[in-house]
Image (cartoon, rainbow, N blue to C red; front, side):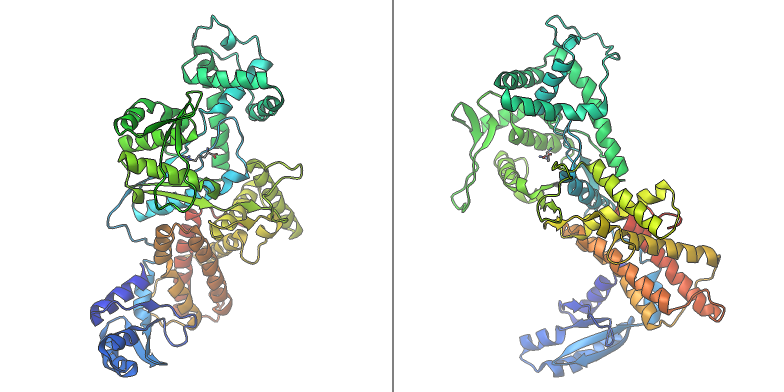
Amino acid sequence: MNLYKYVSDKLNEKLGFDAKLEIPRNREFGDFSTNAAMVMARVAGKNPRELATEILPKIQELDFVKSATIAGPGFINIRIRDDFLWKSAESASKITKAKKPLIIDMDYGAYNVAKSLHIGHMRTSIVGDMLYRLGRVIGHTMISYNHMGDWGRSMGFVIAWIERLHPDWPFFQPDFTPNGDCSQYTIDPVELDTYYPSAAALAKTDPEFLEHAQIITAQLQDGHPGYNALYNIFMPISLESMNKTVRALNILAFDRDLGERNAAKYSAPVEKMLRDKNLLVKSDGAEVIIVKRDEDKKPMPPVMFYNSRGAHPYDATDIMALYYRKVTDNPDKVIYLTDSRQSLHFEQLFRVAELLGLFPADALEHIGYGTINGADGKPFKTRDGNAAGLNDILSMVQSAVRDRVAESGKKLDDETINMIALAALKFNDLSHDLRADYIFDPNQITSFEGRTGPYILYTAVRLNSVLRRAGDFEIPKTVELEPDERNLVMELLDFDRTVQSAFDGRATDLVANYAYDLAQLVNTFYHNCPILRDDVATDTRNKRLTLVKIAVDVLTRVLDLMGLKIPKEM
Ligand code: ARG
């Protein structure tokens, strides 16, 4: 139930005017306030306070209004009836479905084969997963793509490195014939992740090796049987490593693990479209698409479709991937989530899509997120100066949680520690404006107090334990609400609105911060309003238990949207 929208719609209907409804910081004088009278007075050339006096009785006619009063130069404060709030609270955790459900392709994660996931993949994974979940609960058809880097130049490096390690393997012999059984050629997943960096380092000093690796990439893409057979060995191993991290982060499995390799299959139809529209231009041995417009104020370089070696670079595969999505999902929207440093790439891509008539510009969206920095304000690195691996970050946070738990003298199992660590990591990531940079501090985010994931999780655990201890109870038909109870109900009835605005604005921080605000209000309520104490009357106890139940329902949904689970104890 979206209380704000309900009240706003009814009010506008009554006044025949689109008024702006505000939620006052201080609820002492009303739950909502509107400047409708002031705006209407301006239009009619009347005195605002007088006009407010005229429309007040109309507002009071609305059945959910307890009282309406005039304040200041003509603001109208509206208080909602307790019984109306009480009835509405029942459906606080329900989310209004989209009137026009869309098909939305989401491109996030987008990991690279044979390169382990690092801190640069953290936000795309965590935020992408939440946007996906948000879209789904609102009723859109969400299709997630792990658009893997699985076909580019790094593949040649990996194969060239394996050739150095195992020159005797058959894949490199000229007479290689695929016979299906490759079970004796095993590659260790952890070692696999070291091949690309080692090869890339060697290529820097050894031009012959570099040349060889580049030839391998080209031949792989051309269907070389040996290289392809080898690729088919290490590719699934790498995909399984990615999916292991995906599961460890408790993000939903991707609907499609389809990346550059899949896209490359569509190079012919895309090339034909480009040629038919005369969009390919020769430039220094390469073929490019001009996307610059006269009104451009900043540099807008051409998009390379064929490089001078005759290969398709990253830019080109993204056009093909869009083509693939068009002909398979035919989505209403495609949303990409990457580091903001790729903004230009997507601007160029979207222009090509428009030129090709594949997608209109407003169907394509790139969300560029900020950098995760260390305490020094520079991109977060491990002590050895490397980009921190995602698995390392997870263990770092887990051990910070373990230390805190040990300090407090509690004993929690590993599963619970993991749940808390994920809450710390994900809440922190989600609660920041995703377009801005933030500083990552494993110690701060694991605190059980303050604006942290563990604090929210702890609140939910505590509420669940109250309900367990209470056992069965009856839900009162009508109630009167005390201030702390009312504040809680109002916040609960703001859940649906928060979810809708978060999805519309692609602003996951709204939901994360809502979770925190809700947890705080619940704790204030719990502190000020005793529930299970002997001196609490049965009606009051039932009323408060009902509130706890609704709060748990909403909190559980919010945590689920963040991809978090509530432990049994904490
Ligand atoms: N694999 C790329 C990277 O790690 C990100 C790909 C993003 N998605 C896309 N369709 N270009 O930088």
